[in-house]
Amino acid sequence: MTTRGAQRLRAELEELKSVKRPAVIQAIAEARAHGDLKENAEYHAAREQQGFIEGRIKQLEAELSHAQLIDVSKLNAGSKVVFGATVVLADTETDKETTYQIVGDLEADIKQGLIAISSPVARALIGKLEGDTVTIDAPAGRREFDIVSVSYEG
Image 1: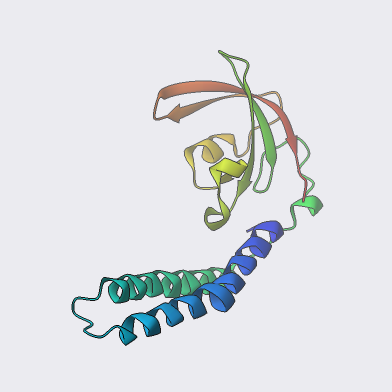
Image 2: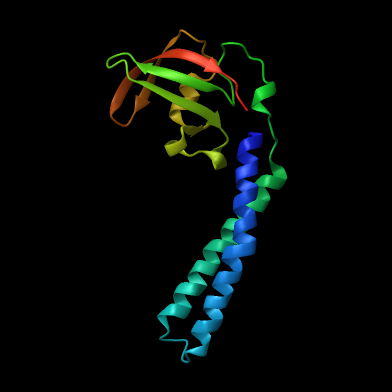
């Protein structure tokens, strides 16, 4: 896991513990005050939300306690794609460029250009060099990309 990803997950964990958990406990207390719990939709919704929050807290605590943190800015793999690399790809058909950073599974967020190390795109890129052409089996079919650049920013 990258150090930046670990910081984001710690912030999420802190928000869950200090903001969302107390809010859902308050919602359960208010719903209980309304009486009959069998037919109380607010109570059941709040209990379900509490289950999701507690599950996420447990998941984050477990992942963070076992994570091996890697400071991407200290990696020096040159132009080779390894974990933590920021890779600029150019579609060979359209020349459209896309930038991805290869991160741990839990910190992946495609909207921010963070792809999981276990994803098909990352698996196709690992070990390749800047200037190589890679073929990626995507849901829409096979696509070819040129690796424009490889960098390691924190």
